[in-house]
Image (tube, rainbow, N blue to C red; front, side):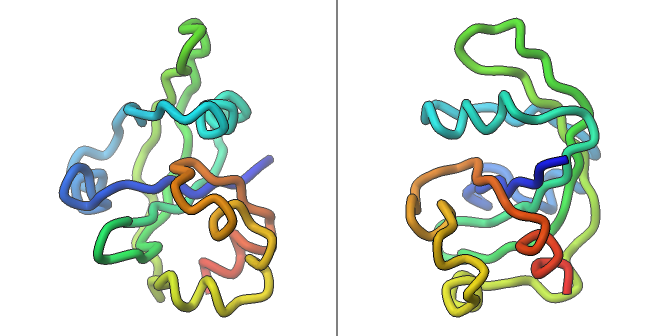
Length: 126
């Protein structure tokens, strides 16, 4: 099962919003690479919630509930909230970690849905 990182401006939709809502559709994705990443998801896919903007910090986890790929432009990905990270990871920490040296997270900074390896996922949870 693949892992991903979803980015969001906390002013637009934050991890606290997801915790309050419990579930939501992850929408507003237009970048073709990010859309491709959404298409690779299945129910049960785990992901990290990352706040962009001034915060630039991974703050929580979530799980994909369902994927409706009937829309040819963008699949409808329903997600639910997981837990807050015990140790939120700032972008400076991520950049310093060798695991991310070749990650699209750092190489394609504006990509809003980023694939993660199992090792990268585990690093966020430590």
